[in-house]
Image 1 (cartoon, rainbow, N blue to C red):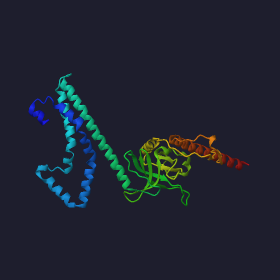
Image 2 (tube, rainbow, N blue to C red):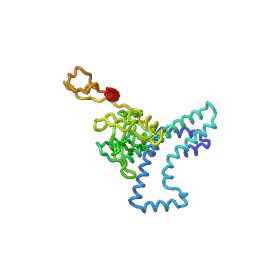
Image 3 (spheres, rainbow, N blue to C red):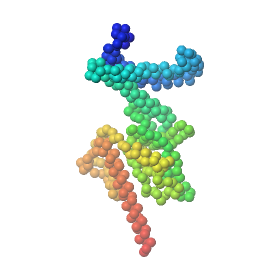
Image 4 (cartoon, one colour):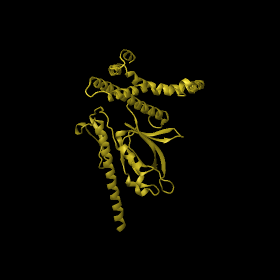
Length: 340
C-alpha cells in the first residue's frame, strides 16, 4: 500500500493490493486470533509464577507512550487492522461509479476481507467454547465411569441447577427435594452434584440421543409440597452402566422447565455400530417378562445405533404402559374384593 501511494496519489490500485494480500497472506490473522486465548493464559500463568512481571506491565501501562492502555489493547491491534481495512473499502465503494472497474475491484476486495473477518469470528467463538469445556473438565470429577470431556467437536448447550425428588421416603412417608446440576452438551448429558462452591461430582452420564423427557404426572399423589407446574421427568434410557435411570426434577420457574424440556428433547443421533453375531440369542418377552433362547435366524440384528436408541425409547413406553395397566388391574381387584 505504501509503494502504491508513492507511485500514485489517487491509489487507483489500492483495492487490488488489498485483495491480493487478503487472498494470499491474511490467513495469518485467523491463526493469530485462534491463538489469542493461549496468549492470555500464558500471561496469566507468568503473572502467577512471577508477580514482578505484572508490576513491570503496570509501569509500562503508565508510560505516556502507551496512553495508559493495557497490554491486551496492543495484542488485539492486528485484528483491528482487518476491520479497519474493511471500513476503508466500504468508504471507497461509496465514492465509486456504478459499473466501473474500480467498483468491481473494491467489491472483490471487500468480499475477500469479509471472509477473513468471518473466519476470525468463528475462531473466536470456537475457542470460547473450547475454553468453556476445559473449565468444566477442570472442576468436575467422576464418581461413575470417567470419560474425556474435552473435544473439538463438543460444545456446551446449557447448564444449571434443578431440584430432584428423592427416591427414598423419610420416616413420615414423604420424599424430599435435593439439588442436582446438569451439564448438557451437544452429544452428552452429565448429571452432577455440587462439591463445595465450584466443584462437581458426576453421578451419571448418557449420550444425548438416549434422553427422554415427559411431564411426569404419574407420581402426583406422592408430592405434597412440590409445585407440579414446574416439574418434569428425565429418563436416561441407557447410562454409562448400561441401565435405565429416572429423575423427577423441579425447575425454579415454569419458563425454565419449558426451556429444559425443549433442549433435552432435541436428540442428535450418531453413527452405525458393528456387533458380533451368535448362533443363539437370549431374549425377554416384554408382555410378561419371560426369558429364553431362540435361533438367530428368527430375528434381525439391529446394527444401527439410531434404531437401537429408537427401540430403547419404544421399550420404555411399552413398559410404562404395561405398568399402568397392571396398576389399574390391581386397583380394580382391590375394589372388587372390598364389595364382596
